[in-house]
Image 1 (cartoon, rainbow, N blue to C red):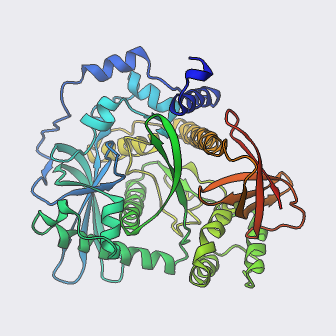
Image 2: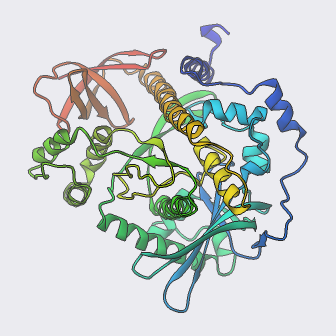
Image 3: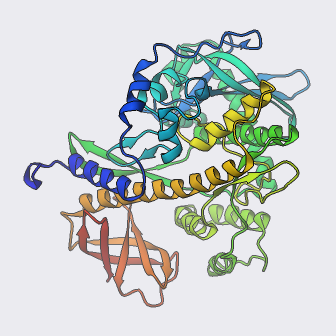
Amino acid sequence: MSLLNKTGMDWLRQIARRAMAGRQLLPDFSTAAQAQAGAFAAPADGRSASLRDLCALPWVSIDNVDSRDLDQLSVAEQLADGATRVLVAIADVDALVDIGSPIDDHARINTTSVYTAALIFPMLPERLSTDLTSLAEGQERIALIVDIVVQADGTLRESAIYHGRVRNLAKLDYPAVGGWLAGTLPVPAKIARMPGLEAQLRLQDGVAQCLRTIRHAHGALGLESMEVRPVFTGAELSDLQPERKNRAHELIEDLMIAANTVTAKFLAVHKVPSVRRVLRTPQRWSRIMALAAAAGESLPGTPSAIALSAFLMRRRAADPDAFTDLSLCVIKLLGRGEYVVEMSGEQVEGHFGLAIHDYTHSTAPNRRFPDLLTQRLLKAVLSAGKAPYGGDELRLLAAHCTAQEDNAAKVERQVAKSAAAMLLSSRVGRHFAGSVTGAADKGTWVRISQPTIEGRLMKGFDGLQVGDRVNVKLTRVDIERGYIDFIRI
């Protein structure tokens, strides 16, 4: 296709496919994987005596508006003593994806779904992830159930994991549910027409808030990330709209963190190796201390999640408009999470950002390979079978998952930068107000709003610090490379 005939969508898709190949990620499924997916006639039925029929419970999913690869459902029950029982259902992907099958081979290579501005590269064929292994609305599916009793103060009292059959009563979305919970939007129509569903979601939200409160008391970091969603008019990119977490995101996040914590402890109790998700104690703590000092505050000389959490809460209250930029800076300085293996009798580092030691990824097996690994380990315990992976193999897989997650993030950033450059291509020479989001030897970075885009400051960066407000002029864009250059004015 010639450049003259290429739409913005076409261009970004080509950039995305090249970026995938350049980062050792497969953009397409093999012929064998496609044939395997096409051979499935129905979802796994899992009809066995040990399977609990939980279809009568008011299960719901909350996800993005356009999500179809639904990994988890949730439901809650108020107990007589003031505690709350929370059940999280996780799609049983392993029931259809055998170890060593063509689909598993693809998932094992990529290890994650890759979400770019113009094209999604799913980890599993859509015949599975958006259909047969998705916990879709109105469909019965088998699932792993994480059963948690949360006391009124937010502590976990007891837990269990077992197999169950579930049915998604309602597919809900973050914007509508979040706005309703925050009191800025009316009750969504789907909730209003189902008796008892409003009270059910209020109960889930209440227990999630209790879980969040106790995590923050232990030092969990209340960072605010902001995703940018591309908006296309036809096949042309017309805008990049910021999307922030809302109350519904927090509800799901808190319940999934609890489920992942229970899962990690369950495997440890049964002396089974587990793939842990860790965020190590930050090595760039002195830079975080400098951020606090620039805001007129101080942090201790040694890394402290509790002290950093308190600092972030104060800054959110003092300057909410600048908090997103501060959060972005802290996120960069904390470094990336990684996957490591914890063997029976060993103890690896925990998750600094969540202030949790026992933590794994288990709640998104349609989208992440580490979650599928964890699911297979859980099912081996539940069936009293042999662990499907040895320790050495798990260590190799954990390191590979970390590397591929990083590659996937680079692909997503590359396409996002190209989309941003595309959107700004007609605005070269214009002036913008922005804030400094990165200042180091390798470059100084500025983020503007309307549209929300980050670019490199090529001139006038001397003396600038993270968080400084600046006025800049856009001097150059390169759509293929995703370059956006500013100079200070």
